[in-house]
Length: 227
Image 1 (cartoon, one colour):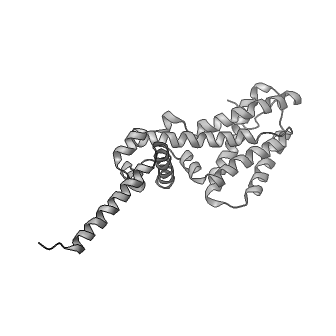
Image 2 (cartoon, one colour):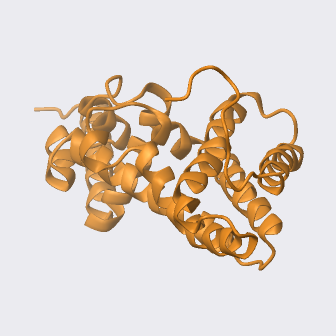
């Protein structure tokens, strides 16, 4: 019986191609696969949000089956939680690492630049952090992250308040206000990107510094409402 060389060759080609794909998957270690899934999930969560992203799509983009995603993270929630945790630590490290100068005004500048640097460099991560998600209730929210950053500023403000004769116990309130102002401005700037980063930082510090410079030791209300 004659053998159809073209058919055999075609089948061999298909078999070889499938074998190559399997070989590629085998060559990727568990750690490498995990990082690949995290990168893909991070991109999709930033583009579509938590609800708009599916395990099927994550698996398809990674070239694996759904069970592989479940094996590494237990599902979409687990993957999302790791992505959020990484971004929160990245931002917190950038802000706390930037607070090195001794002069309070320069510290304000460093804090503002650190957040804007993060937004500029890790835009996808920032978009994920500011989105609302049911998973965020257990893994942390952008508000809780801002609170963590404000805690780093409390001690600095407390010392400054004490030196100026203000009540240092109010430092946490002012720290939350200052960091919150920068964070909300950052949410606006992530889409506009105008004016330039340095100009945004300058205006933020202008408002914060001159506001702090004219603080009243005992602030008063001038309207009719007193409570």
